[in-house]
Image 1 (cartoon, rainbow, N blue to C red):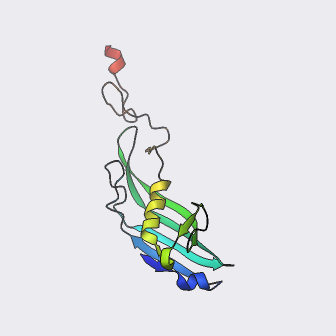
Image 2: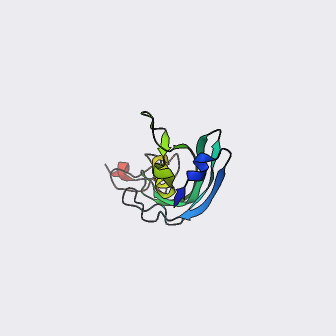
Image 3: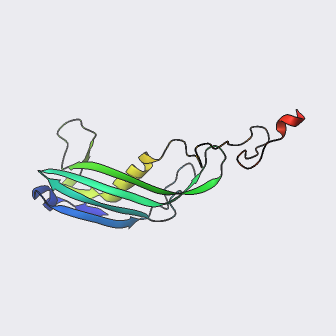
Amino acid sequence: MIIDLRQLFDVIGDHKRIDYKLDLSEYTLDQNKPFPHPVHVVGEITNQVGIVTLQMTVSTLANFVCDRCLDEFQVDYEEEFEHIIVRKLTGQNDDYIVAENARLDLDELVLNDVALSLPTKILCKEDCKGLCCNCGANLNITECKCGEFQ
């Protein structure tokens, strides 16, 4: 979704609401596609005292594979994001989102935000026991008997 921000940049107090669904079903994370359901994006872009800010909430039902036990699991994914949007950078500040020609590619921004918000280690539960390194048994489900025969 491309949003034209020309009027928003020029009119202090102006705002634009966002409410749409984004298909991220082709996004791949470690050979898995965690977002088979549409991602719901709700938020607002506002010009307050000449500063244009974007506040949005991204939510969906996500499918992940646990990094320890390799079980698939679903989780309600919901994250809030906030950005300052500028027409162009005047310095070396990576904290701002540049809307070239006063146009913002919201799909690209949402994808980047979601990708960066995911943890580096995805676990089905905080105390996941993982797999036995000898026989591969899921230690969350069964006790491994490998030690008894060695």
